[in-house]
Image (cartoon, rainbow, N blue to C red; front, side):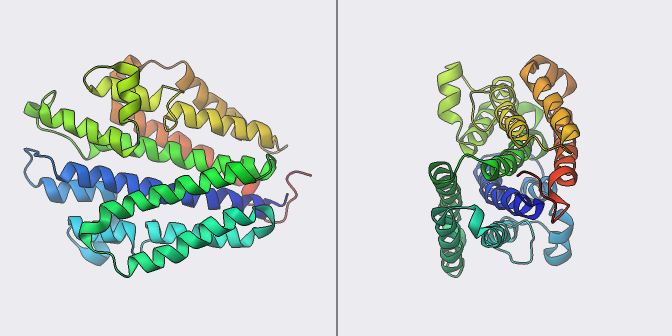
Length: 319
């Protein structure tokens, strides 16, 4: 496989996953905005913090100024001017898929192409009240693409690069969504352990489709420590950091390129830290600090994968 083919497969999957997770982050923010929070300037802080954790704050402020719910949502969801918007992620996924039509199945292409065409029809008639339905639509299209991929593509090196892009992006975004609690949902001291705190953690669980899983695993009231344990250390939770690094490490082992030793070492090191980690140690370090370190390490791993497999455009990686 040429490295340019691997690059397109990797980013096709990563952009699909990023679109879904942007919808999930926006969902967290919208659910939170409906809750009573005793913080001065909560609304502006909430929406600016969302821009900040997704890396869009500077570009948004240059165009729109003060962060407001409707303008931030449209910028993150539908703006062609925002490279990280759902609109641009789905367009880039389609462009990457178009470049490797021979490496994916016709069913995969049809899902991505239909998603792009339907998005253009939706965006022309979207209003603020319909955004919740839009978030659900994005998530469902992402689920459909993954299901069609696993049901139609050969289990070869192409699938390994698709998995690598998907689960690297999912790990990054699960960490960011979890950081919402301390970066966006910061309650007043009086709210900690109270009703507002309970509903904030509940909304976070629902945004990552983990509310039912939490109830089955813990059968108790929602607590910050247990939510964090579920989304960081539980390898039986599909969107947890541990589960994502399981898949990333497995994909790198399957690819097994001669230039990927450092990438496999870094993935193995991150995976081992999650496999043997304890949630008490995470909270002793500080949840926000732990997530910040994880995001930095994931970014380093992504760069190493790029340098090893994706940046040499005409190199044959696997025969």
